[in-house]
Length: 408
Image (cartoon, rainbow, N blue to C red):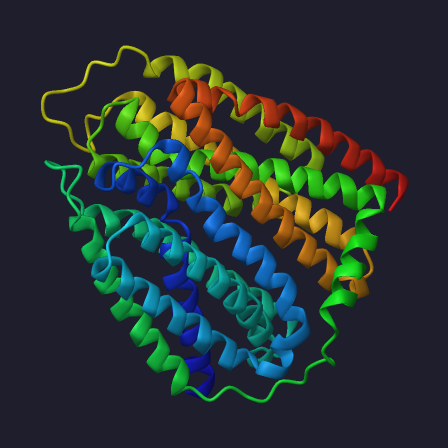
């Protein structure tokens, strides 16, 4: 029973954070209407989420073991609860930025704690992999449900209405339930390595970047997340302003992107048993490019049905989010390639680099897409994805060459 409670608390924690972490695109669309914010200004929300993840993930290496993983999760969920309550009580763009700062910093605490706690409640490698995949599955379930959860509270008649803020009362209640479950659950004592000074962790990470293989990897990770967050964060606004869909429907159809990412990663696990990772990723990049080139022209001069619904939206609204199917395998695969190429003693430092450059890539992608969207058009912003896509193809080629030559 105790082990079940621990597993349940870990899954619920990840579920709550998944909803809020992936609500950036929805919130960008809403603050533009509700607070009359420009696209350039709204684009910084991704940074308020990602930069704290990078900074806190780096800093916690020094003091989180002393704090304890359960305490870290309690702090993270408590801050999340306060952030959710602030949104409807003090509605403003400033509060929205504060919320995402809290979400990012709290998730850094939670992710490390959840991953470390999995080892406590499992005894074999198979059990560990199974529970990790289950928890990540709950994360994707949170991502998918989040789009529909937010859409339920949005006013399709009045886009500027602040009715969408009512969702945060329910998210605060969910966080409160999560907090009670965590507080009342006994976690076994963890055997922890002695805490290092933050400066030593930083130096260890910097030394890794000097390795050619690692340098090319972080470039690849940066470019991938730049594309994923650029599309994911601006897809609801694209559906609304370019395709002419109501806010509510725009968010609902964005869930296709999240579902495609989930399905793509599941399928990749099967396909990789039969073909090499490098071949698969090149097929994925080609599929992405083809979908961009073929789908975006369909967004011009759209004739909308008189009564729009999920069943009669423009074809592009269904096709373009399927790009997630091709994007999905790239990030997990390159992470696996680099970790397997390094000794296990370097995995912690490498994980730090992954978090930092992923966060920087996500922020950069959202800001670039936002500026391009505002200055040119939504189509131009998404066509721009072809540039980092081409650079990613080059960096993957170098990564494969270095991996084969064992030049670490």
